[in-house]
Image (cartoon, rainbow, N blue to C red; front, top):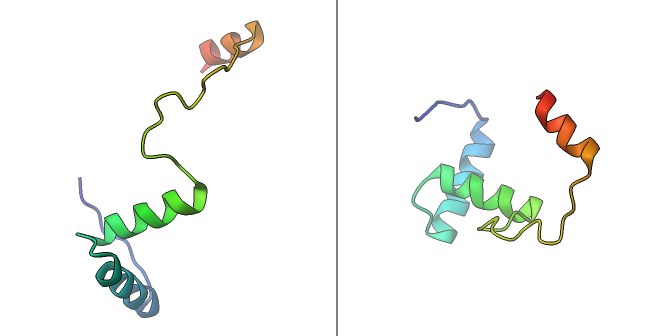
Length: 65
């Protein structure tokens, strides 16, 4: 569902420039790509927690949520 966000004119101009440079389809794509690169989020989370071991305390915390 689309939403509106308020940004400064400078930010809008930077988004426009980056959108053109990267041939992005939308500002959403520009923002998502930038944040993903900054936070080093993989395109797929499949196998991201490979080898992770759960402890009994961890399971209990999940149940409390």
